[in-house]
Amino acid sequence: MLKKILIGIFLLIAVLAGVGWYLKPTVNGPLLDMILGRQIEAPEAETLKARLKVPEGFQVGVFARDVPNARMMRMTKTGDIVVTSNRTGSVFLLHRDGNGDGVSDGRSLLLSGLNAPHGVAFWDDYLYIAEETQIIRGIYDADKRELGTIEVIFTGMPSGGNHRTRTIGFDEAGMLYVTVGSSCNVCIEEEPYRAEMLQMNADGSGARTFATGLRNSVGFDWHPETGGLFATDNGRDLLGDDTPNCEVNLVEEGGDYGWPYAYDNRTPDPDYGIENPAKVSASLSPVHGFGAHRAPLGIKFLKSPNTPNEYQNTALAALHGSWNSSKLVGYKVVSLHFDDDGAVTEKDFLSGFELNEDVIGRPVDIEQGPDGAIYISDDYAGMIYRVGFGDVAVGFPGVEIIVPPKNPLASIEPTELATNKAAGALIFNSNGCATCHVDGATEGVQVKKLEDLKERYTLETMQDLFLNPPGPMPSYEALSEAERRALAIFVLSSEEEIKKLAPPKVNF
Image 1 (spheres, rainbow, N blue to C red):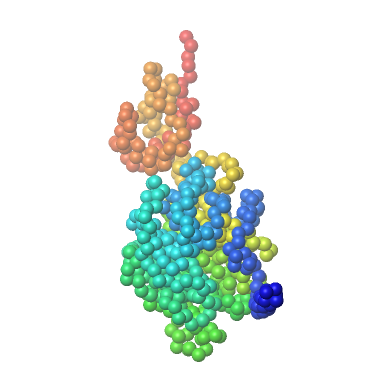
Image 2: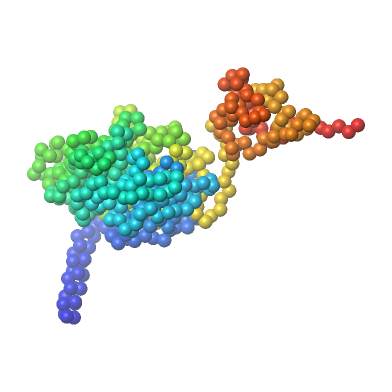
């Protein structure tokens, strides 16, 4: 018995040594952690503040921590975030930031005991979740944060292999798309659906192949203006540090994107492409190459109207990071800027996860809220980061921050602000507004003080108030739209000045 155990140990060591020798020129990074699904201890706030970098005007914080193996995300209609944890078989709900500190107010467990849940999507009243071999859904009540009875709508996706994650999403017409990765680094697949994107009806019926030759497309999204479907794809390994590119493809119905016969711009794969020139020449080339081994996962077009102009219709892509490269590459989020002619410019957006071969995070997916806040999941540190611009607050769990007051006039140029403020002051005085809002202006009148207006009103809601005021406030519908705007600007910008308008007391 002991002899058999020793022989088994020897064989195991020999196999590991052989694999190590084969991979030695290029293996680097957190490979063992990746294989075992092991997370690191979440970095402290000071480390993150020192390491993480975003473009000028943005700020980054941590929306939630201790989210095990945080992968794909979708926001509910009430602002909560559903996040999958495929290695734990769970789906979590991170509660929205209700107090304005940039941090999740709590969390719930929506589901557990699933088989590698990964993709998540909403359509109509349903929450959809993609497991390894099937897609499930249930009615979701966003207000009550409750998920109803689960039903299976699609089965038959293959299990096992190198790529077990399944990502899902809906187009505007309500068609459901699913990506299924390859079983291997490079091979001829025999199982159905491998290395494909599928399309089906929302109830799971009518499933068919939409596109092929996609080795492992983990993320996809639609361009908000053109409607083009763009998907990331992970290039094959073991061809050196620089070949082939991981990529973004414009996925078209019936398209073949090359794997396992071709990569990059119809370059024949050394294993299968040389003997299949017809398949190589028929393959579609990517619209953008990230470089080799970056491992792009989630991709998201920024669609909120509060997104800065230079990032409107820009896509963010999460580069999970390399293992099959002698020098670590990836480990960041990049922005992809699409020109009118289809060319793509790549820029760093959130970087610092890797520094001098030290890795503190691996980004996975991106989601954006209607206020413009950007959320990024990290399955290595178990974090959800929040990136803000302008008045969007960011913070760190357990670290108290001072939330700056909102400024509804922040977007108005100084000259325009001064002009409207002066005009609004004349309207305020000529309409006798001081009578009801300034202490001592009129004897015997109970004053309604103007307090905390910037916290309670935007410029638009203040203008609407003048048209439909609560009693006994008179209506200002006789004012023009420009006059109501000027009055709103004056009131919102002059709260402290108005309080000082009270006439001096005179003693006889």
